Image (cartoon, rainbow, N blue to C red; front, top):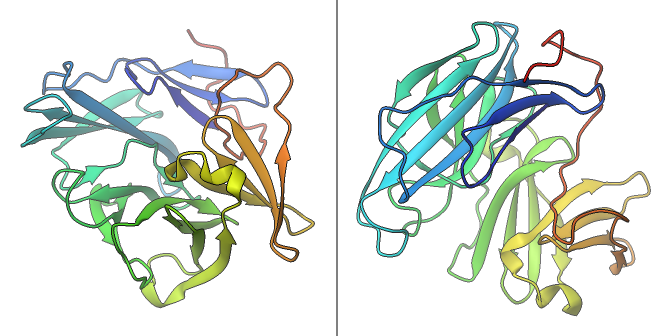
Length: 267
């Protein structure tokens, strides 16, 4: 199941099963705060097992100034329930969530990279939203030598919560959390030296996607390049573009399913 929306103005939100083509256009979420030009929204999607319900969390940040030289902002979050087909206002957000959509691991938590306060200051955080308790909280990170030359991203890798600490000039460190929420369970899985051809791209967009059966790691380097890295040989090869695909696109690993909770196509 996928949740699809426009990154710039995600008023139109769809739930889609790409295996069956069945989809649902969600009702308009609305916000009490005015979503204007100096605003930003992010989204999360997951399945709440206890309630047997698919949920979408949409968060809005309204800044006092344009994105350059921001001093303060207002925030608001709303949760959509597929069962009720309605949005619920859950108020302000105690963190500044990242612009990328939340990750979901099959449990009750949606997870983002975040900061406390404005996104430019302070170190990165990993923040989860508990769909059962309807609350946000921090997830402990691995102990790393953090400095201004590192960029951190949060994702799913090998089926686990993962962090990618990316050096602007040198390498990427891939950590996975073997037991959700347990700080001591973080494990450094791979240290990947960035090949010269990748360094020319913005290092902030390097993203390991999946481990293949032969042990190679598929990585994404921005919207143009996909790379296969063999950690045993420390070798790389560039994947040819997909024929017929747009010039720029991003990749998301999915698992096919015949689940169709909507019953029929809805527009």
